[in-house]
Image 1: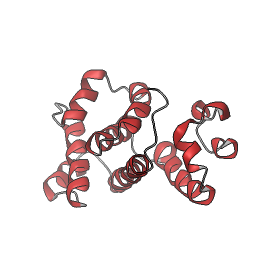
Image 2: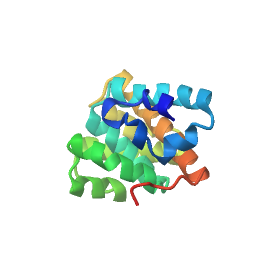
Image 3: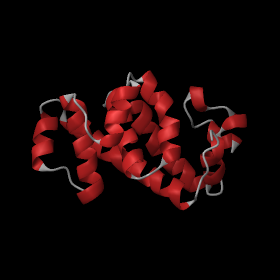
Length: 160
């Protein structure tokens, strides 16, 4: 677990508090290293803003029923500027801001049919570059995979 914690961002790299998720993932170090490499790109090197990234994560967590993922990303979403009222809108899928609504709709498309609809793609294309659109798809996939692992392994939220 201590070795895996060095792969996390500085604010999360506390070997004494890596959490239940990394403690569980430590049972398969090579898989965890590969996943965390991808996850660190999504969190730290993506072409998306932190606000869009956290919108994707929160919507994915909400749609996949991952309380653990939601709870662990609320502080990151707050730092990215997503107020509680917006987080509630994201959770319920009724967002007023056009770009945020388009991101939520795209995540829903991906989760429900593995493809962003042409209408939502056209809307997003007015705001995002090709690389950002690719990052949106891969970010949704990254956190869908993580939600599946968290729920399948029944990882308890240590914050409860």
